[in-house]
Image 1 (cartoon, one colour):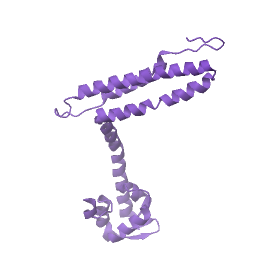
Image 2: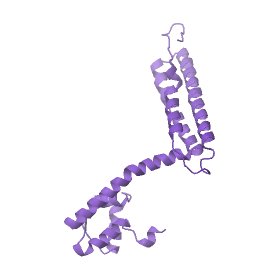
Image 3: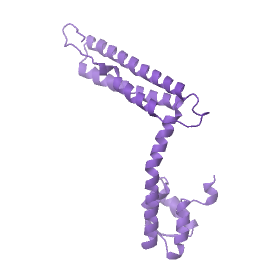
Image 4: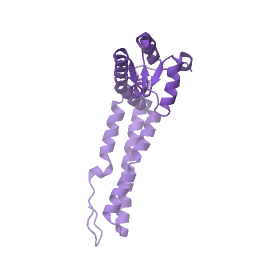
Length: 204
């Protein structure tokens, strides 16, 4: 408890030191998987230890400084509600700095995020391709929205670029649909695998 004459006492808890964030990042650092190749993970223990120590110290020191600043501003006459929430929110930017340090010392952290994203998105892409093939086989046409998601192409200018690419493959379009006669189904299947990009372009 900090008591300032003429003001309501201020209480700080252990949690005010940022121990929750320290524990979260400690768990991330310790549990982040790494390569099984000896040459790659030769210094993994040192890199993880450095990231753990530096991130913990940063969180702790920044939060101590934050509490001192809050007490000083409270002493000057600022309302506690105003300084508590604003400065606490500002100190959250330290997490972004920690992530940048993890990217430098532990690229496995970023690679793990990318890998998890791939595990989630790849089944979705496969399902969309299957749906596109089903519609092409049965409905003889596939919507542009589904094709954009199945091929992973960007939304910007998709209609113009895809219409152009589809015509290069010999397909006709009707408003927001790609028309696929039975005779062109195999060609559509191959083009879908290439994301409707010419083989020469896909190699660039």
